[in-house]
Length: 151
Image (cartoon, rainbow, N blue to C red; front, side, top):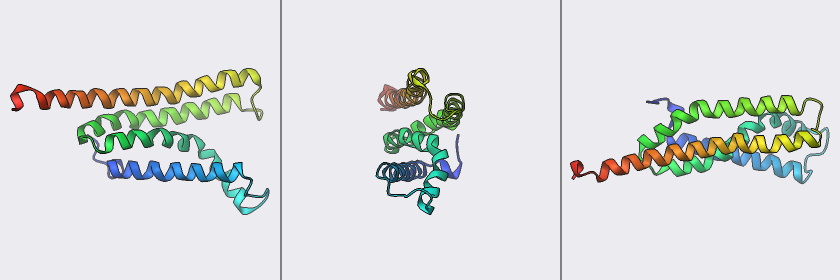
């Protein structure tokens, strides 16, 4: 059972929402070129860019934490037992792929053909396994509540 203060439903929901908003702001700043090269704004955006895997994962965690927010604490705890090791695994896999495929700057065409499906596989696996865990635990609790021994 996770009794860590930072692992409450509200804390995870709030943190993933804040990180998602930061990512959106960074994307807007870079897409609109609001930060001129060599300025303090550009330096700040560049220094935050190395956290992109965490920001991208927050976008995945946000809907899952919204989904578990209104559910039983047991469902949330069951999901967080996976997320506690799943999130770092996804971040490490993302960083390793970045090191392998972006070692000389931008990847070539072949590497791009490999990178995109691998990123989809990594993040998709995290999302699908999370949904599977949430749904199976939720169904288990519903069966337990509707069993004849409870009523």
